[in-house]
Every structure is written in structure tokens, then in C-alpha cells.
Length: 320
Ligand SMILES: [Fe+2]
Image 1: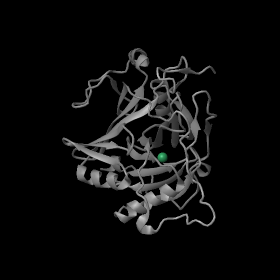
Image 2: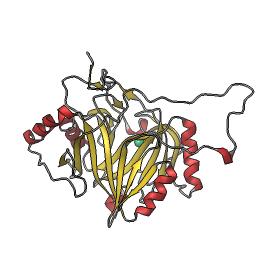
Image 3: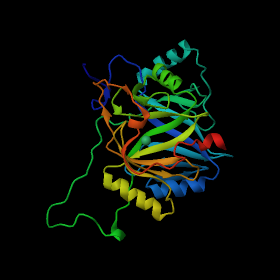
């Protein structure tokens, strides 16, 4: 495939096809933003207080990945996806063709974007934004140290783990097949892999990790986890310890997934969902089509790792 480039020549773009390029921003409502500030700060994120909201950044990156506001109960309020500027009018036409209602933005989130609801009623935005999904596979550093040199720091000198970027979001859905259809037909994403009607992983078409968003079957929408990219397996372990030291001991890991291949450790957040340290996820370049498969559940969840907690897939957002 001939690869054409966006205005910035370093940004890959799949020619002639309409699709979002990035997970741009999440908006989370929680009962007490102070709980969120403590949790995400401990996780190694750069959490900034602005007015009544928290803005979630990663250290060394200019992008704002999330906003957190206070409300009566925890809820994933909306997900914003980034698109190329000249694609926005085409997305508008597509939404109109599909008779999907265009909505006003939520108060305080006025933007250049298109607002609408997905198959489950979750509020989405497609807006013009920088391409924050990786343009190539993220660099990994699992290097050893030379002979005659100590490889590990002492416990007291262990470096603070600071994730590099928001990698993906996993949400609950009432209907995985409908989710695949909606996010393919409307947002122009592609199915990477699935396990029947239990779980599906989708990627962006302009160069993306194996999944930018994934869908897990439940009886209501909700948030399962946000995943944050770190550069090594060692950083996953250090991150898990960093959280345990702050009292966030519940979770699952260290392990390695099958679909996406990433190494992981999940830390349970104050509301029963998770934040994932993730490293070395599979990457789908702009000029490749991923051979998506439908995998048996017992052979697709994780290659190795401890037994997951019994309530790992429980939808606390639906139970509240
Ligand atoms: Fe994940």
C-alpha cells in the first residue's frame, strides 16, 4: 500500500479510508475526586487540579489524557476520539447518513468535535486532535546489565514509575457484536481479535496498538480499566510495588496476555475498576492488515500469570 502522510510528514495515514486515529480523552465521574487524585498520583501520573476537575497527564507528554469530575456515583461519562482535521466533515456526513443524532457537548466541554451516543448509550466525541496513538511500536527496554555491575537498585532507591501514555480503555458492553459493528461502521476502527461474544479488541487504522478500545460482555455499560504504557517488564513490577506501598494492594499480575501480547499488572482503583501497567503490546502498522481471529476463551486470556481475582470481570458500575 502506498503510504501517504499527513501535514506533518512523520504522521502515518491510511489513504482513502475514514477512521479515528487516537483515543483522545476520557471523562470520568467519581464520588470524591480526592480519592482519584491519590490513586492516579500514586500510579505515577501527573494529576493537575484545575477548578473542580482533575486533569490527567503523563510526565513528559503535553497531551491531556483524562478529566475527572465529581458526581453522585462513579461513571465513565464520555470517551473522545481524535481524527484528522479534513476527516471531520466526512464523519459528520457519515453520522447524518446513519441517522445518528448529533448532540450538544456536555457543559464545560465545548469543542470542535461531533458528539453522539454509541450502541450502548455511551457518550462519544470525534474531534480534531493530535495523533497520540503511536506511529510505530513503542520502544521497550528490557536490557540486562554488563558483567561486574549490579543490575537492581536497592529498595529505597527504586525509581518512581511514570507511565508514558494512555494506551487503551476496556469498557463493558451489553452486546459485543453490536459494539464491533458500531465502532467499525461509525468510527472506522477495525477488529483485531475477539473471543466469541465475550470480548473484542479494536484498533485504529492509521497505525495503532493492537487495541485502542476493547469491549467486555456485561449487562450494562461501564469502565473495566484504563491501560497505561510503560517501557519495561521491570517498570510493571516497580509500579505494582509503588502502588502496594501506598495501600493499593488489590489487583492482578504480573502476567502476559495472549490477545495483544502485552505484559500486565492491574491495580484495583477505589471504585472496583482497574488501572493497568502495560508493556510491549503488539503494534499494527498503517500499511498492514491484522489477521483478526476468533479465539476460544480458555486459550486467549493470558499466557502466564497468577489466577485472576474471582471478580476481575465484575461490572461495579452496573451494580451501584
Ligand atoms: Fe488492557
